Image 1: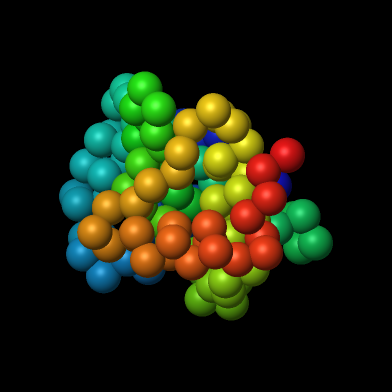
Image 2: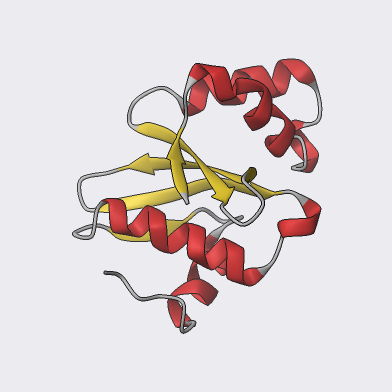
Length: 122
């Protein structure tokens, strides 16, 4: 389930982002969250409804006709293509008129998602 970031989720987001190698230091995490909350960027969390816990985070940037996936991180136990693809589909469904694209680091994930059977925008 897609959940919008709120300030009371900050520690959860820090924990999830800390799985990204270049975001292990507290100051770097704090800067990333501040940066992710500045327009036109947005932070989303992914909640596993089966266990009622947050298991993923994404930072996206909204353009006129695109949504740019800047960062995505999952807990190791939830880091599967299925979860990532469901998360991307939920993000894409927030703005169906926009195309989801990736950065140099995230483009392969976006391309694989677009080619998969999980890519079905409602």
